[in-house]
Image 1: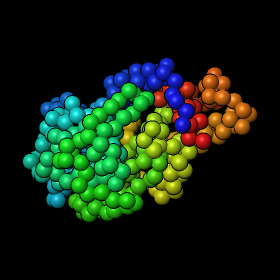
Image 2: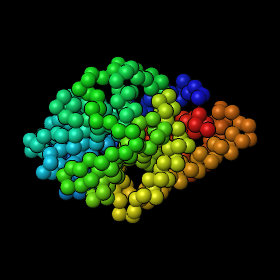
Image 3: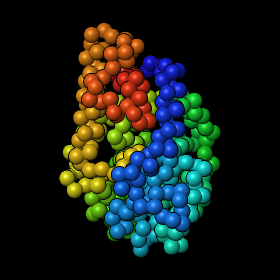
Image 4: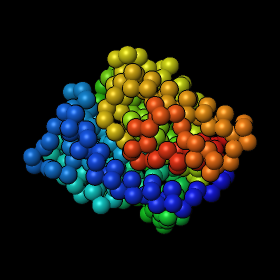
Length: 307
């Protein structure tokens, strides 16, 4: 694994801060969000009659609400946990939060585990529990964290797949190994025809690949292809970051991944080192994809480190 250059680390970190401010604003400007006047912290978007997406900074949260109670997929940053709790109280009308599904271990998706997990069952892949149960780090962001307390750890874990039957639907949880991290879960709602991608999809931007924690850009692209083949034109696709999309949106994301990886492979075959690859850059058609969380130079670095 090649070390990431410090200047690219700083650029990515700065763009991360901008992203947390800009994600919801971008979505709102395209008419995707319905603002709730009693809770300004989270924008709410109705996905189906039982599913609502909550977004602010951090990963997109999906709420299932029905006769069985409440279930959420991911729970954002720790400093917004109280606001999320308030939003769930308003939307759920006092219903019990039965389950939390962590799509992976990153702090912008599991920050609410500590506050919300005391009386709730947390579900995740085996590796998510392992990561959260010990000291963790993301060198790209100079991030380090201590082990989570017992109540904030997933108590139900699985190695490859599991089903959760809840609110009249069947949720299929599937592990896609060594993609964004080593513990990624994608959730398919069988009846609603909705898929929550976790961070197997940043849209429309280059994805963050956590090389240090088992991520791999090439495997990421291969797994996107597998998921793409499983969904249909009516599937509602919820990315980990960015607005709700569909199979056509995933097709664009898939094309970007495959093409940019092929470009880096071609440069590597010519004997170019990382600095030379970053100087040459990718085809101009991918320029706008580098305006989000991860810039082009960092994305090239992720690919090169994954080959």
